Length: 611
Image 1: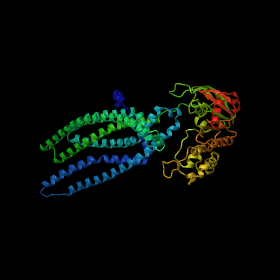
Image 2: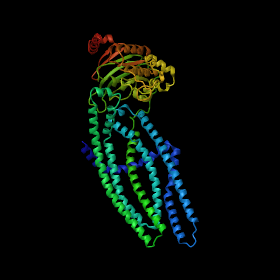
Image 3: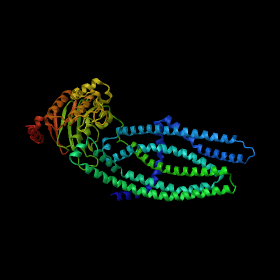
Image 4: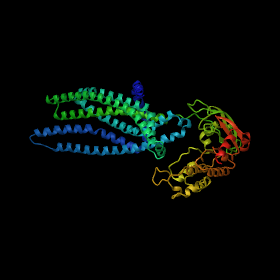
């Protein structure tokens, strides 16, 4: 598998090389974001780099003048050291100023890097607001997200490298100007000695990116294996089922394949780099011999010799560093493309001419011939489903796992759009409403609700985060959901940290977490309340009491309940029984029991278990 992957990478190498250059067109947009993240620090950083870029050639030239002056004074009958001390003072001043500016550059680099890292991370997080659930549940999307999320440090390095590159180019231009004045042939020798190494580095940078990109899914798997292999949530099953060796072996096998591909690339890169560097070194010393010969023959002064050798050496190092840095920039620009590819993901098109949400639901919802298949799926999860949920009605969905209950909820919430058919609210197709405004009408708690390792008040306020500081609303929501009993056991009350991830955190049982989650639903004064099996961890009595409260507290509101416990489901006004994506039965508890079909069978089976 690794060989096939490497072969495919080789096939794409030429494209990736060109891609490195084309991706650099994103640099202006990138630096626009960097500037917005820290305008003052960025501007100050650029100014300091421009000033510092001129110091090398000035120091070299002052050094030339100093040496020529020293030789002149040595041969003079009466020595005058005034110019010598003047040149030394200039060198000292430039050296001190250069050091101060370098420290300012390092400081602002760090500050800008932190500011941009924070700003881009916020941008990545907030981007999910624009994306549909169908996009968020797609594996290819997660590959894009992974590349965007994990390359933040690389983008910060790109900023520093690009600014250093610009500074270095100014240094190079000034040094080249000096060499052209004295010995223009040195420039040609110098460039010819460095170009092969530059091409070699660029080629291997593109190969490295190709490997990183093609192994995105595997790197996500490695991260996942690291997580489940050493985590308090998974520790019980890992020990109980003896999974440690299985997980570690799987991690080792996959990581070894990744390592071996990188090793082969690194060895080839090192070998060819050494060969090209040897050629460059030989060319450098050939040019150095030419400079010495010119000095010995009297064509240039000793000061000129010092300036030329120093400039040539500095220019060679600068060009090597510049070319190497250019390949890093080209490589980083490819990763930058991944970031902007994620940021530029286009959300599904929405209706621009939206209708106003009804202030009050008068008729309710109607599903008309709704069918749906998950992206990439082969079978319909819902098949021509039609029914009504009347305004103020308590509706329950019942069915075995995979029957389509939760999928119905996702379609009602517009997490997905039906493949065919439509959903109406008060006779209007729900796609006619603004999606965000429409979704605000719902208060929902799913079975797989998130256990946020926040404080109790923050966990409850998730239902309506704008009420985070509304203590009265928090306490009322907790009372309604029975979460007040949980809070009463907390030493710090609503300010108690939950979970073990942070200091002074307290773990909750499954039932306690569900009471906290239920409180979120009560925080939102929503027109429609949906409970998708959020009470499965409660015991039968606690769940019954929770649903009784729910039914009472949502009086006059449209409510939807999904539960496997028929003792609670029977409290609904009507019950829909789903099987294989179709409606099998519909009616009140009494009507369905009289029908003596699936509902009655499942109810009696469950009742038998309680005897």
